[in-house]
Length: 387
Image (cartoon, helix red, strand yellow):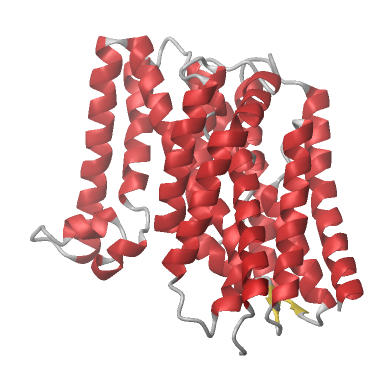
């Protein structure tokens, strides 16, 4: 591969940063803390500040999986040239910017995936059917699984025969166990997760040691939340909700950074550039976008989709975190708008659909579908003209 011309490098890098900014200002920056803002657990501006920091951390520590999928696995037989990379990023960021201006959450994963596939096909690439099946399954199942789990949790929390000093700590224990098994690049030498790293200092090894650490992490998380909720129910629920929002924000950065920097990866195959440096740049773009553009979208999602209290917000964020980390593990680009909005609707239906706007929901789903088709068409057409 010939050395990348400086001008092309600059344009591609700026396009990627613009995309990262649009992601931070839109789906990645808005959706994680929107339920917490809707529940009055945190202000809009403070939510934007924390989501930027946590999104950056997720991008740097867990962003490689989805970045590889977007950059190398969506089209077989071709590698995107510099012009194609710029086209992909500008299409994705442009559609995201339209969503930010209009207040409707455009699904970033749909726009970037559609544009990459459209550009790749225009260049003569072959369909990657296996990856499409994996992505399609996640996209199609997300509303049913996320909405269904949120519905179940929202139905359970208000029940008098299941006190919240029991139900909420059980949720916290599940979340703690999952956190112990998140994969991080810097733990690669000790198995990749907190659980395997912890098992390494125990006399137990392998699966047994990992299972023990996982159980201990779950029990510890549940015990802390039970103590907090027992002494101050309202405050304990609010603090648990903010922790969930932080975990979703972290997961958003891990997933969404791949949509911004993934297309750049083929350009650096012959260059001595660390993937960590590319992820760092994408994380900075997401952070700045969260701080400067996310408040508008946070307000749109938190106030216009449903009027959420702390319990329904917990019901929304728990499945959102679990689905997000599943997508990161699989290396599947996923829309956080789809994840969180589906969970919001599920939690709202558990109380009779109060606060859920059918018109807003229908327009949003329509925007998701149109954004994918439009991105595919623009990508294919642009390369047909440029190429």
